[in-house]
Length: 122
Image (cartoon, rainbow, N blue to C red):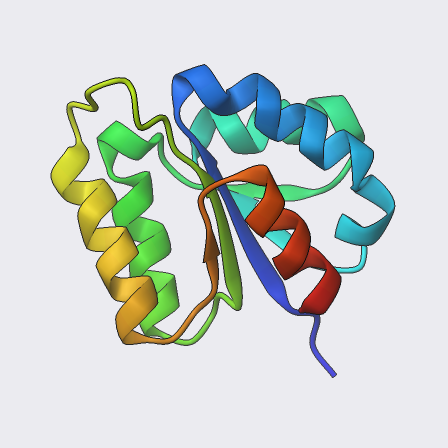
């Protein structure tokens, strides 16, 4: 049976939070295939030693790449730590990713509490 795939995405002000969450959950995360947008995937991999397939940076199309994989059925869950207090120049891409996750019924966590729920129940 193939491993389930979790995509990891974090806005700039949430990257440290994502790295800390991944480090706390490295053992559980090691049982999944991981992917993520540019800097987030690199930082998580460096901090945890986990293998994380990197896509483009979010503003350069990484959110869209992950959305395409959701539509193909290749991603089982998304942890997207978004910053609701800072305007994002690629907000349309962010909204498109949220929409595609809803359309394809893929669980998407936008905060640590929900990320924990997904990780413990996927």
